[in-house]
Length: 344
Image 1 (cartoon, rainbow, N blue to C red):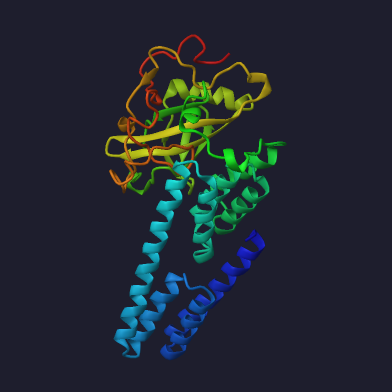
Image 2: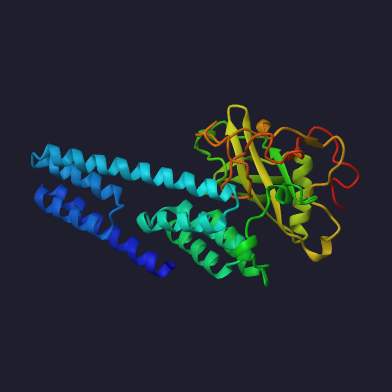
């Protein structure tokens, strides 16, 4: 599906939903039932249409049928959540082909699901299918014109002249190569999280946006709401690298009462900074820690403990054996980054 097709689908859905609501407003309940049934025929995944159908059926005394409509809406939400979980798990395993398949299936049933387009775009990007990735992110912008994730990735795709295409047989990036790609990935705990921000809304594995500010770097969610800041030493280093032309992506690894942790990956290194590592392995900053210390996903602690893979998108942290014998480096911010911590 391209952005033009999606725009047509969403506009028609909005128009028909408005008509159905107006019929209810004027107490034309049977007509409202018919209108919502027509919407469901157009898209069987329209939960809102099922809910409106249930309301209309109640008005004409068909409580049994209304109950079925409400149950159908609940079942659809369950399907969407379970499919999303499968999509995330496949991304964790760097099984991008399967991730593309699952996210595409979600979109077919729920074409208004913003996060599925962003995950689909990421999966296509990992396989070097940039045209399709761009198309997915453009669809995300149709749903949410201010989506920072979609905007960031579209900008990245447009500025990248060539991207190495992964062959089908080697499209899965190993966990170790992702984490141990010297100086290109780091995990850090956010600071200065606003008291008003509900970390319970964060989902492990989802992409977040990094922006530079006068005194460092901040992390925003997909709605552009500030989650927190990168600790000062690391932020200053990354800010200077960004100003020099580097680009980065970030994903939530864990979130809860003990804070929010993100994994940051260098996605592009400017030629003028080829010898400048984003995350230098200096003593006092880089610690070898069990993966469990990063925490599992917010909603499925323990359920994904058997997953042994990691990627830079749609992932949740696993256990300490994921990268055995090596385990990921976490940038604690407790100590000097070393002589090259702040770039000149």
